[in-house]
Image (tube, rainbow, N blue to C red; front, top):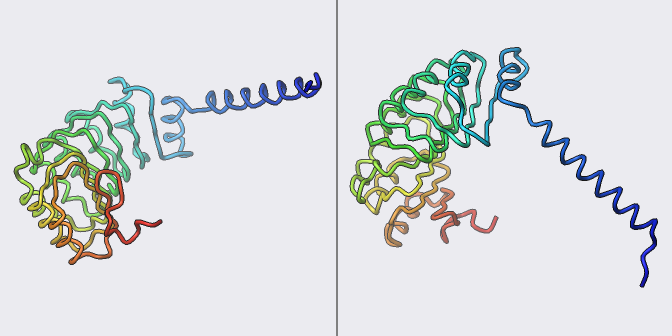
Length: 236
């Protein structure tokens, strides 16, 4: 079977157009400087950098953006000193800091951002002291956190659960590779406000989960990135 040369030409033209459009989309991705300018001009309130860490000069620029509400840094790197800069942002609502080893001091500084609603710091280094500091955030609804220092060697799960009772508005909790254990889940179960609970590497027995669901049959639960069998939303 032969293919018409005109058909081949048409396919080539279409592919070229698609590649050109894709290149245009990639080229249209705003730079950090463009995003900063937009926030300063009042035409935007968000900054997202996905492909690199910020320079020291860029961090200083962020500290002066009073209108910034969303900051998403996929490559980090924020430490406790950078949290001081973030504490100066009066309207910050959503914060994503990947590859950022914030410790207790950093979390204490973040507690000054009373407008924070969503916090996602999956590679932190805080202890329960830092976690407790976040309980000072009156609007915090969504917390995604990873830190081996929260429950070192599987110890401290009960204290972690009790610390969460101090949070006034938490609705979604995601703990990453934190060995809260059965005692930790028992403590979490005392918190009545959760809608979503995600636990990865938590080391919890089936019996402990049965006790949790007896108390909270309505909570949406993921364990190690999958719906729990008792999750009411597992078929969605």
